[in-house]
Length: 272
Image 1: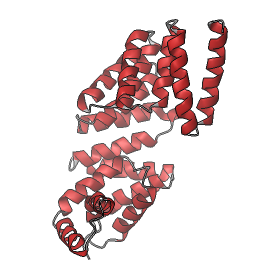
Image 2: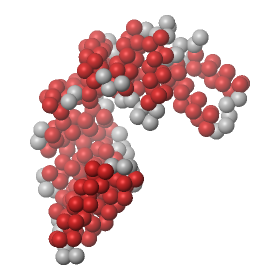
Image 3: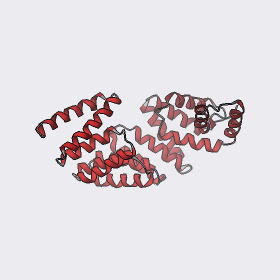
């Protein structure tokens, strides 16, 4: 039996073959041979998955981490990563935090790329009451892997929550520089600029976020807020209406209710 770790390398290839109706016996056999020969690359993909699970494929993710845990050919570290990922998928947050911390401390100095990903997951799972610990984790991740756009973006979020808005914007700048396009980073940077009352600049960032992700409800909502702050009420209304439509499509009842309330307030402000 080939090492199940290689399944991470081959999974998306299998999905592509299936979607294109090319899943012949010979093709699958050939693909399995290719997978067997790429254990190192599959290990890298396992480490990629360590930092963030795939919310669109939770069952596959759980199956794959379970397969790794039961694979006699997997290394102890690979099994640790699989266990941490599984705990994270199961929302056993405290156990996952402890596991990622152990992996981070163990890998640091010998496999800094893995250590950076583990610190990222450790920071990501920390509650907002532990913002300083989140910050420490993202600082570690960035030191160990300076091109980690995700760590810069998430550290920016923490700094914004701490009120360090200029520093947050600098982190979003770096996240965008490292990994364009990135709609979330543009949106996050827009939020920080809006809090500094730099509304025109914020709108420019929201424009880019929407260009990159046309169904980004939060970006429409945020852009509406900035336009409203500038007195551009008709444009704000249009953005709120777009956000409301998308929120309803996403069954986001809380946001939809909030937007309807804002639209009602606009009726009063513009005299309609």
